[in-house]
Image 1 (cartoon, rainbow, N blue to C red):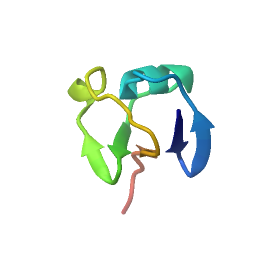
Image 2 (spheres, helix red, strand yellow; image 1 turned 45 degrees about the vertical axis):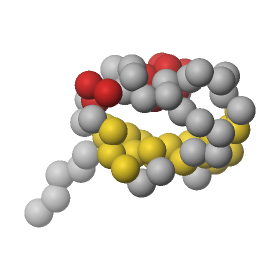
Image 3 (cartoon, one colour; image 1 turned 135 degrees about the vertical axis):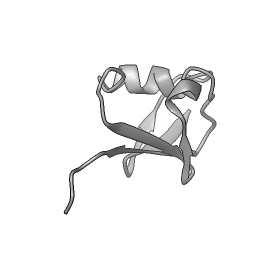
Amino acid sequence: MQITFNNQVMDIDTNCTVLQLLILQNLADKQGIAVAVNNRVVPRAQWPHVQLDYNQSVVVFTAAQGG
Protein backbone atom coordinates (compact mmCIF):
# COMPACT_ATOMS: atom_id res chain seq x y z
CA MET A 1 0.00 0.00 0.00
CA GLN A 2 1.11 3.58 -0.48
CA ILE A 3 1.71 6.20 2.17
CA THR A 4 3.50 9.52 2.20
CA PHE A 5 6.57 9.54 4.42
CA ASN A 6 8.25 12.92 4.93
CA ASN A 7 6.64 14.21 1.71
CA GLN A 8 7.69 11.21 -0.39
CA VAL A 9 5.27 8.56 -1.62
CA MET A 10 6.39 5.06 -0.73
CA ASP A 11 5.05 1.51 -0.77
CA ILE A 12 4.87 -0.43 2.48
CA ASP A 13 3.36 -3.73 3.56
CA THR A 14 -0.20 -3.77 4.74
CA ASN A 15 -0.49 -4.13 8.53
CA CYS A 16 2.56 -1.92 9.00
CA THR A 17 2.76 0.00 12.27
CA VAL A 18 4.47 3.30 12.92
CA LEU A 19 7.27 1.44 14.71
CA GLN A 20 7.76 -0.97 11.80
CA LEU A 21 8.00 1.95 9.39
CA LEU A 22 10.58 3.65 11.59
CA ILE A 23 12.59 0.42 11.75
CA LEU A 24 12.55 0.25 7.94
CA GLN A 25 13.82 3.83 7.83
CA ASN A 26 16.51 3.22 10.50
CA LEU A 27 14.88 5.74 12.82
CA ALA A 28 13.37 3.54 15.53
CA ASP A 29 16.23 4.01 18.00
CA LYS A 30 16.86 7.66 17.25
CA GLN A 31 16.37 9.97 20.22
CA GLY A 32 14.71 13.36 19.98
CA ILE A 33 12.19 12.55 17.27
CA ALA A 34 8.43 12.85 17.15
CA VAL A 35 6.06 11.24 14.67
CA ALA A 36 2.82 12.65 13.29
CA VAL A 37 0.29 10.63 11.31
CA ASN A 38 -2.14 12.78 9.36
CA ASN A 39 -0.99 15.83 11.36
CA ARG A 40 -1.61 14.18 14.75
CA VAL A 41 1.35 13.45 16.99
CA VAL A 42 1.63 9.79 17.98
CA PRO A 43 3.15 9.26 21.45
CA ARG A 44 6.23 7.02 21.38
CA ALA A 45 4.48 4.43 23.56
CA GLN A 46 1.83 4.05 20.84
CA TRP A 47 4.21 3.51 17.91
CA PRO A 48 3.96 -0.30 18.07
CA HIS A 49 0.15 -0.15 18.14
CA VAL A 50 -0.76 2.44 15.51
CA GLN A 51 -1.51 0.74 12.19
CA LEU A 52 -0.91 2.71 9.03
CA ASP A 53 -3.59 2.86 6.35
CA TYR A 54 -3.53 3.56 2.64
CA ASN A 55 -2.70 7.16 1.72
CA GLN A 56 -1.84 8.29 5.24
CA SER A 57 0.82 10.92 5.73
CA VAL A 58 3.63 10.24 8.19
CA VAL A 59 6.06 12.97 9.18
CA VAL A 60 9.09 12.57 11.45
CA PHE A 61 10.22 15.68 13.31
CA THR A 62 13.62 16.11 14.92
CA ALA A 63 13.95 18.18 18.06
CA ALA A 64 16.21 21.17 17.69
CA GLN A 65 17.57 23.59 20.23
CA GLY A 66 16.42 27.13 19.85
CA GLY A 67 16.95 30.38 21.50
